[in-house]
Length: 609
Image 1: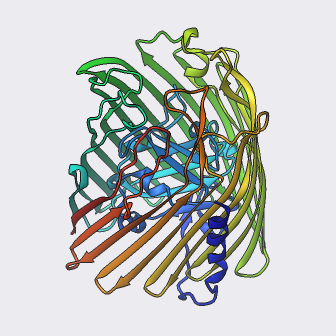
Image 2: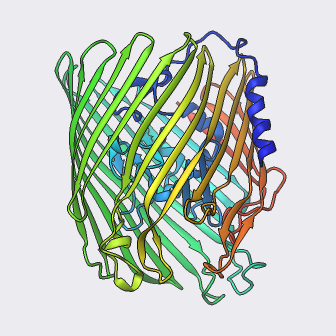
Image 3: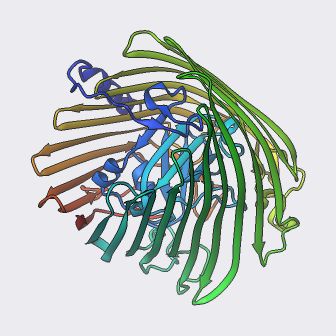
């Protein structure tokens, strides 16, 4: 609620900005401009979750890791592995583009990405860019872009092995081997996860639902190899594969039914990097992203739904001066749907041209991006971004940007059977975003305070007859705050968001989105022992009743959750880890009628050669 948001905001001011250590943060990111750029110079609000932070968190999956970020809300229907939705700056889950090593892995039928199927053992780092980014990446990037990078081989070849077990008969194991030999870098990671979970739906709200535990199983692998033919030319190939099986409850089915869904996420990519001159870098990438989904009822397989994103990208990066970069490129996308359901159209193509300029002129920074996307089924969309930054002092900086974005109608929206409510005459959703930011960075400290105002028109929703229409307009404005600091062996992270995500026509708050949410994390190093604690708060949210929608709308209560983590280094190779989620066993709901996990404990042993 308001008081807790302002309390979190006051914590930023309460921590002196002059007491940090002297080591300068020099993190480099690529997602905010499509080229390497210092995080301290980005004009779009960008957050990096590093490999070190992933390991220290001991989180179970990507949704759990993202929950503590400013501007990010995540909900799951019943625990780990269950269907998740990601709300970035209050936008819909299919209005945020998720990339895996630059590859689209979203479903072409729903537009969303099954982030619950991404296990952290395969992941090296995550970059989160907030705000319109269609001028860089095309459709879906209305809320922003989350790019996930899988692990790469570095240094001398080495092994890593980990195993853990805990509440709800949760078990996980992972192993990997990677490194560099001469001019070739490689990495292979394998992981296995299982949990018995809890009943996905609350029997107190839906009495007739099956009360059995709804578990989850996942087997994942990632592999990549890169060979450098010279300092100027290299060729790489990578693959990612996640197979998950999740039990779930149906609020309208017989209580004796046992329902499973199988989800298969796959990525394959080949990349040629070539420095054609001292100032010209060419990158050619051919990739394929697959989302494959199938329901199983009482052991009988149902219809299978498979969508594929085939993408060819050619990007040319020209270094005009030491800190001025021009990017010019093209993309060719082919989306396909394979299903027993008779879609009126099962494939479409998108041809895109994009250009971007990033310039640094002393204390001033400029970013300009332009893009033109032409889809075979709805036509052309032009998007742009204009950003400006000014260094008030060496530590303080102000930024401002304005941009546009769009999202194509999904295959379910426009090409599914008419009985599903599909409408072939839909237009793409359009967005216009403006924001103003204040940033501080000095040594081991970073502060970002960003006001944003995103207006989305031609929003695709179902009308009173359950036919998809371009009916509504949404407006989401608010303030994001995040602050990171390292005082010697003590690290502090704070994030707070105050937003107003609403339907302009009705004035109603968008479903499952809080007007305020925040988190505070503290970690402390005591020699070989590292301890961490995290408090997560969310205000009230509105939702449809699980069985009485759309006629009944209700309010989900605010909640506070405390998580703890401990890591102890036995020697330079072995360490013990433990994590406790929901320490005080709070009972709360992220989606009406669906259970969340109570107190859970996970203990593990890790080896790094």
